Every structure is written in C-alpha cells, then in structure tokens.
Length: 327
Image (cartoon, rainbow, N blue to C red):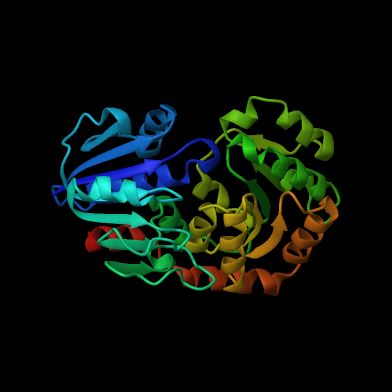
C-alpha cells in the first residue's frame, strides 16, 4: 500500500501536526505491513531534522517538502494533518488517491473525505458528516511509543517535579514568562523541583535569563526526551495543543494554558472531561490567577489522583494503530 502523510507545520501552527504524522509513520513501519510511506511537509525545512531526530532512522519513510514531492503523484491513501482544510485542498488530494483521510481537530469538515478523524474532545462533537466515515475521540489520537511505555511506569507517588512545557514556538514566550511569574508566588513548590523545557528557538534567546530572574536557579532545558522527564512529574504546565493528549495516555496531571482561541475551545472540553485543569488564556491570565490554579492542583493529592485517572481513561495510546487500520 502506497500512503502519503501530509502535514502543515511550523509558524503559528506549531509542530504538533508534523509530529503526529511522524507517529503514524513510525507505527506503519513497526506494523511491518510492507507499506510505502511518504511524509510530506508544508513548512520550514527544519521538518527534516525533526524527523531524523524523532524517528532516529528514516528507513522505509520518504520525507519530502510538499512542493518537491519526489514521489508518486498518486497514492492508495492520503492522510492530511493541518488545523484548517479548504474544499480546494481536499479536492486536489482526492483526485490523487483512492482513499482520502483528514485529521479534523476542530470538527469543521463535513464532506470531501472518505475518513474524518476527530481525535480531540469537542464541545458538540463537530459538524455532522454528509459523506465519509467518522472516527471520534482521543482513542484515535496517535502518540509516540515513549508515552505508551510511560503509561505502565508512571506513578504519582513518588513523583515530585513540576514540568513546564508550552512548546518551542516563539508565540509561547509570553506563556513561559507568565508561568515563571506565577511560580515565583508558589512557595509550596521548591525551585529545585521545577523544570522548564523551552525548545531550541526560545532557549537561545533572552528567555532563560528572564525565567531565572523571576525564579532563581531552576532547571531550563532546550529539548529533552519528554516522556522520560515526565516520569518524575507530579504536575505539568502545558499549552493547549497536542501534548495534553500525550500526557493523558500516561496519566500525568496537567494545568493547561491556551494561546489562540481554538486552543481555548479544545482545552475547555478536555478539562470538562476531568482530564486536566484549564487555567485560562495566556493573554488574559494574571500571574496570581495562574499561581492559584497551580497551587490548588499541586497541593491536593486526591485531585491529582482523580485527574490522572480521568486522563488515562481517555486513551490507551493505540491511536496510531486504529487510524492505520481504518485507512
């Protein structure tokens, strides 16, 4: 079977869509079905380096920029992963494959695809389909194998760290500064138990100095094996993107901040399921408000247990296999 995974990545969209496609590519390779997999990216060429580091080996996976496909113009199946879909884009890919699938995180695609995957909780489930098959819910959210391993290893007791990971895009700078200011007011959280994961773009700028100015000598990392780091996390502070579903598979409790409005919609639905604590928008929150949300969660053992349990019930981590089987 000849499959193309097409992602829009970089910029304001972040890298979550690309990583999700890479999770699927890795799962397809691990399933040993003899598939030919092309991972096509619409975004900066950093996507190649991310793929090489993330997958360790690109054997069996063709990674190409979308404008220079370097692979067949027709496929047995195409899966598109981007925040928004246009009718013209769906029509273009529909003409080049036998089966078209789309990740529809916001629930806005009603037609134009054979398979519509809505892997995030939505307030109303999204628009009804007029054609195609719907896969709905976090059990269809692809995650990396490290999160599945962590599901078996993670224990709230004796986890004792607070990990802040809002994503490496420059749009999250304000979120990191806000969180540092909030944690400065959280005297119950010891500074030597706090880790900030910034990503390389933000780590190379002035942000680390700003964080240390507010908090002192906390641990600040450019990049890390996140599942391994979260093994000791009592609580994570994350942005409203895809990482909340990674954490949910493992059962790591999270306080969630949102950036763009679409993140707020998805984060609220996630929190309403009891799988996390939604603190609010980065643009609207005051440091003391975020400090209160963090402290109320950090210091309440039963609340942490309840959030961890609710999160783990959302997904068993087998989303990649379910999506590939549906293709």
